[in-house]
Image 1 (cartoon, rainbow, N blue to C red):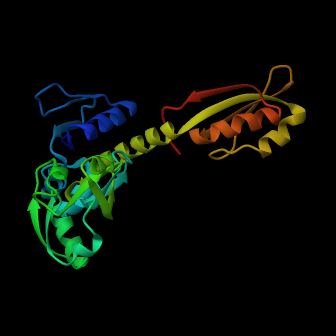
Image 2: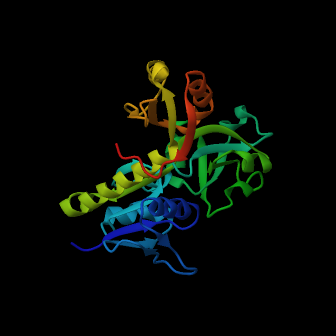
Image 3: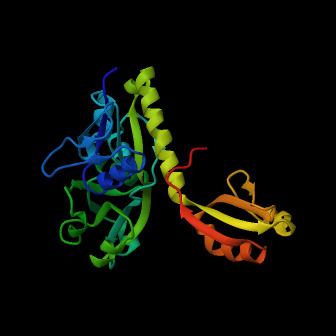
Length: 284
């Protein structure tokens, strides 16, 4: 079996994906003005590619797996297999118009719509009953209205850039995030499928670990039943007797957002010497 060929977009997606690989124990680094990252696994080979191209190249079968937003998979209509949603780079694909343009005017005229998402825009505009002409953009779409477009269809994370440019959102068309995807050809190969699934398992373990912390505490025997009854955990707590038969040491993995409420509750239930620490990976 040859190396698994991976596509990683440059920029924000690369930063998040390289950190994910690193936390999984596979360091990835990229020198300036290069398109071949160094990757710390002999069975992996990576190449930098624009997120817009990842889906189509995987469909062609020239690479085995990659990372891109689901927006670009939908835009290119690429026939690929989605392995997992990594949850990175969450954005909305929205339609926005100048703030002073009334909704009633949108369907009373032929709109000029500026967008990088030509296919997504065309489908939505047609289904929404607009009369329109699409102008393809190549970045900085928000600068087109009002002089050069009546509407834009673009991605946004907070909507602030749109507001700063005098635009208001009239519809959310799609919600997107970074996905780990694979070519059908690779998934039909048992060895490559196994490698891809191993990567996905490592990624899930890292993402689950980021979302949780471990809490350790001591509790007297007399208070142990009440404390255990009040514990959340992934399955059941790990319990060990303390030296001298004076009580128990208890470990639980909990979600980070539970900690501010949980620690005071544990103290009231009799826990002492509570220690919180980060988890690197959680493998169910």
